[in-house]
Length: 395
Image (tube, rainbow, N blue to C red; front, side):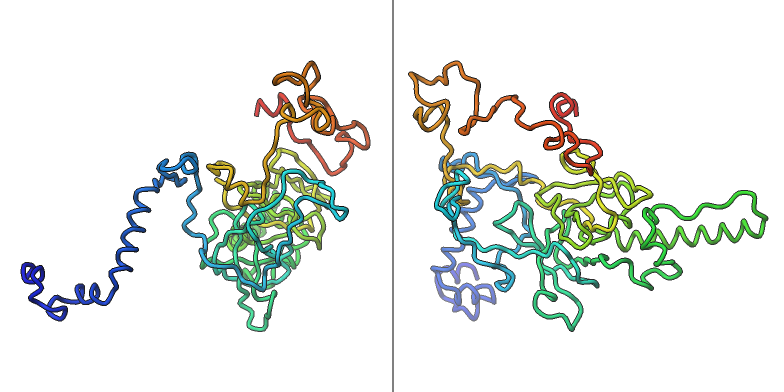
């Protein structure tokens, strides 16, 4: 039969379904598909977490990308985006206020929901790339049939491990009644750290009272365990008073009705380290700083997605230009009227201390004023400042 097929004695009908499918596909499309597959196999070398390329060109030699096969390859929801107007780092007077900005590919700003006021279950439709931030974003769909527009569809900062098909909820208004049977939600919503331990047994009680206390304690422990299993999931929003000590969080708000503004970059996370009897919760930020945050403020459970973003390599200068970054020139390569290091003979900044283009100390010189306007006692909410110098190196 193979010999007959080679000689062309049998038609497509006698050759079976595979040959018929081959006959219906054009030779140009098959050749293009084979060439694309061969090119992918030749150029890509997939490691465990990064994708590298064979150096068939100088720009591919050092190119390294994190592997994110779960990212949606299509376009974003147009109604949730805004055109990004380029300014080139210039203010309203036309003067450059931010250097090394300009050019780049056309982009659209994704409008994210940092407040998460809508209660109820939201389905994760997909995980998308956002050109305006290092982390990935997740498209949510509200299950409420009455929701319309931005109340039905929204973008959020995607936590690590969140995938399409998962469910997230917002408990910004508190734990709803009936979520866990036999649990006093009113006391739970108003008591800081109430989700951590069940009520203790009072010593010195009679046998019947002790048995009742044990039953109540065990049922309360079971109810709290069920509640923590339902609420402490990546992507869920809770008030800080409802988050147990040691929980990893991100997207932290500083006002009870405000949006999340802390810990939003790729791979970053904070941790709840303690609850005060008053109105504050101690949170350790990504930098190591421990600060007080109001217990009525909200945070999202989990770590921010795309933790390998900091280890990527663009591979060539052109990719930086696509992102809107212009070249950065060394001070010693400039003229004397352009930089304090400029001018002179040869590659030397003379005997000056290294400074920035505005004359600030650049290597070890303290530029922050102490006292009320500086780091010391400048923020009453900071319990412990971030480690600097030797303390940072020892960690």
